[in-house]
Length: 433
Image (cartoon, rainbow, N blue to C red; front, top):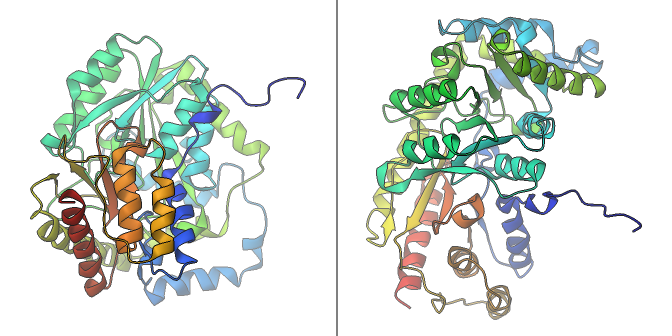
């Protein structure tokens, strides 16, 4: 071409959560059965929505109005409902004008990083959720900027690492938290959140909070919302219905802007995000109309609590199975529906293998691993071909650690036990080969 087409940072766009599917599909064509532990879709893992929720959506579909455009920022009555929910925390207070809808949080995340100055950086947790880290790195034209989550301390943030990176990097304008965290399942303690907000206040930063899993906690944990603790620091909370309802196919997420009046630059940034949606006309209307009817129904709280309890039970089952492997660093999870399991340093080696019964699959894996790749990705490929379990390597989450992420979503308990027993047996075979 007469000029370069790709922008600096375009090569940073990657999404291993779905990249691994390409490998799994090749094996599936060979007749192999695959257990999909790569992506957080409750519906694909046998979760059934209550009939009353389906009825609410079915009734909305019968209305002619649901097929029309809606206001660019989103339906007013829905934004009023959500603003009232946030204000009920008793912290920062917002109006419906402080809420803007997007076509899922992926759309919101892309827009947010797209309109930051190229020199502005948002520092996020590592292991990092790929949608955030890829978008931030692509906009900046550099590798993602991260602070460390410590697997030897319940995956809590290394606050000294965060503080020093903010202090000595004047390009940092914001701090990202994902609470509860994806991919680790960690729930940020209140004191940790307060310290992060204090760092933001000291260096005049804003807070990005991905709170898509905010109401998915279990086994005694509670996730504190940004709205109730942010004080007068500017911030954006990103929320949606894909995980909590759950309705991932709806592509319905929103941003809530906090303390816009405290910083004119931050206020202009929020205005730009609103304007970006106005150019696109509007976001999905049907799920917006459903939100007040479903979330405002007293049956939803009962349903969500029961669903969380089931996730917590599955977390304990997985812990019982994998705790028996001494070469792993294993933390029980208390939020979201993932667990990140880490191999202890020096455990993985380049010559390790698992027995692969399917000869064609063995040839494929040996081809995939014939080139230099991270050792945890090598393990993941062997687990996929030998045991038929599709997980995601942690090296793909902007981390120097070696391990893999699984979900806690399989609703059929016998299938859950079978899958994680296969993972455990595969680990033992691989490490002893």
